[in-house]
Image (tube, rainbow, N blue to C red; front, side, top):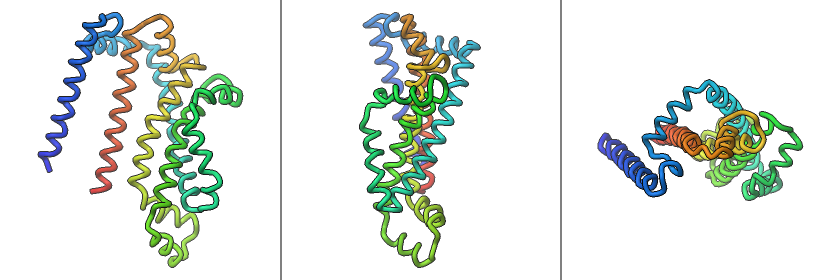
Length: 247
């Protein structure tokens, strides 16, 4: 059991090393101003996180993201159980979830601004708009593909709808739900950041947009790296939780 884990970490380290070398080579080819090298980016990240203004932006983004993530996960899970557990409701309303996924979210931003105005509510709503539909769709599909014996067991035990969902449906599709949550983690973060870029006076997205406006490439790249690291660590953590449940 130890050897595969060690090999996995070795492979990950090798990929990271190759990526850093490619990054350094491209930086040397196009120039440090266009693409700052890894070492300079690391130093700039340290300088950036030491700024008091960055703490305020980070706190604003974190609060909006946490709320959007909570609403996206719980709302998507509730809708998925509803759509998957009761076929008529699912056939009626699930297509709207697919429509939301297929629609470029930026085109809906004027509607979000009209409904919620400028500020935190708009970027939270935009985050929910990104994160909720995938959870609902994946949960619905997982429940529909369940072995019919679960429904027969519920009828035999005469479970109420709430007990049927909580005691049978959700535990039975927990691996799929965790996979949906991984997608929600990334999509909700994307929605909040895009919301901050377009209509906010604070937050990491606003800082990114301001840096783009003044051609501050070191700050742009530092923010991208920080977001990438957060998303990657979150995904690895959820993968570990899913693997532990399977074992």
